[in-house]
Length: 500
Image (cartoon, one colour):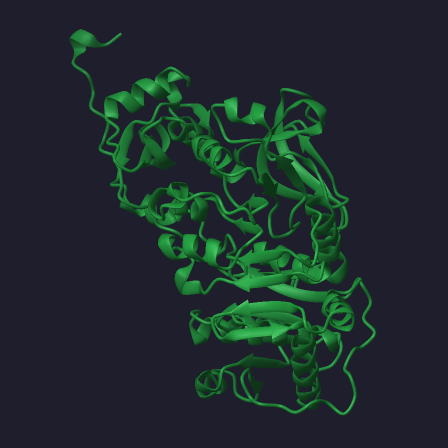
């Protein structure tokens, strides 16, 4: 199945059924089909052909979704860019992927063409009549469908190339797992540049359901998010845990009865503090699913939260393989990790990306860089990032494990741990966001940690914060927190009388 066929098939079956709604209006499936067809014809007139790349630089809206569909109908690939991204970065992305055209709003075109002389542009909102004939190119399922640019470790964004087959393997698994139907109403919280949005859009379209776009400016407005959940009668919610935690902590979500129409809450992207999961499970009978997978694999494991998970003192497992993928943990010696052992998670299967744009095609399993612990029955528990592993006073420490323990304290909403200094001066620094009305003390937090962790893993410094900085995708901005930490003071040599 190719991604644009979902809308075409749904439009043929139920043209008047709501497809997508957002701040600028809504489209039925018939209207979305018509708009995507008209834009596709216009892009074809601009020279867009099979295999080309088209940047879609716009606010989240039904028109933007139609533009993405239009690109797919030509056998081309779309490259989403958030409207708040600077023109220079958009131009760099377009140059990097050799974009044939850019779809954006009329006000952005002059500056963009100044940075990209000769680039073909299309006004997203231009009124266009119906095409002379339907546009629906025959597209191979292994063809490139979209490129998602992520932050690269070198500072240069990397373009993750995803085929129709890659995306459809996940989407069709999600539809089956959720039992999605045309009656469902999916919320779209994530930016269209973030892989979480793939489920929101395409699981809705594949099941003939509707997707309801949350404007970017409301993404972390807790009261408005809770209102949205109720007013839009959302049945499937999917977001990073940070958004749900904010809705519970500052949006009054738990003070209102759980909506009867909410039947599934999905979260992914970062560990979800177990206390928050307990609160969520006590508030709604909806199924709770923890989804896991980097952009390069989309979702490759999942875990349905069960009553026994709520008795844990750490985040729920990331679960077992899904989407037709095969996953396993590899120990440092290269052997497959057994039950109770830790290792780096590897993924092989239909959701694994084609590769990074401009680099050789990816072949074989994808190394996630995430360290997991193997539990029984093929279930994995997230431990942390391999590249976040640090050494403190000669000991290997995974900050994620320290964060999980701190987050289990009844007065703590979230905790983030970073390291300051180098070598023997390295020290663990924790930033703690208190729960509403609570004031956790440093000594109490250290006592709580010492009862659950080896001494070398207890944070050397603890700072309470009013909020945690976030990246554009809603994850904790660790670099911003690390920048707040002062360099370590030189170690003080103890007096001779107390030296060993």
